[in-house]
Picture (tube, helix red, strand yellow):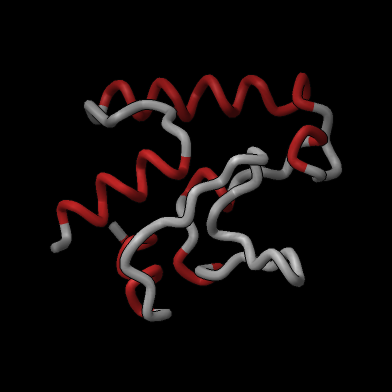
Length: 94
């Protein structure tokens, strides 16, 4: 929900299509997140090597699994692509 509110706060209502696999919330000109201060938890925790961070995924795999378990215990939605999660949140906050 925070990401959807951040998206709307910058004057956006709909998500652009991303055909190249890049995050639709990135400014294509400079690569910066358009909703940086309102970015989802998953974006805030991408510090592994696969996301360009300093750690190999195998070093943070335990943390990822523990976060997935917390999500299950809280009856969360589980991992979803940012486009699907934000689209749902935008619908819910209309």
